[in-house]
Length: 217
Image (tube, rainbow, N blue to C red):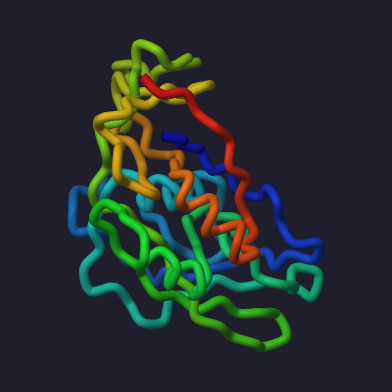
């Protein structure tokens, strides 16, 4: 079994579209929300971190707005869509064709939250935020090189004592066996994928991520 961690903004098109503006319409997850208000146009640095977090930690969104969009603010940001769409919020934004391909693979419980991608020239296209609801207990912490942990004094109570950054993760084979794309409970800010996902992705000529092999235990 081969498993990979997915690094975004890698293996991209020569003229990639970049979403540097967005409007998430003030949506909030069903589960507890402990961060500052997020989801504005032209978010500041703290807002961007919160957006990435809220679409990584297993929240479930109800009553998702039908007019959420990610856009290019100027002509330089216009371009061709990578299948993992580059956006400055670091949200897991994917194309329609990737969302269709994922239907043939095995993923833990998740949502495909519809959004529109808006080019500066006015073109619009449907895309999706891939939001995992179920996180897999798959990280072998004892064999993973952890760089830092959140201190017990960290303002966000849900992150206290958890991994803040890591290098060279090791995953537990029996816990992840059968999944083609997933996030781990122990460090949900990284996507992992199977050999089947990699082969399907590359065979279809998709772009936007690099598949880096990980160790298994």
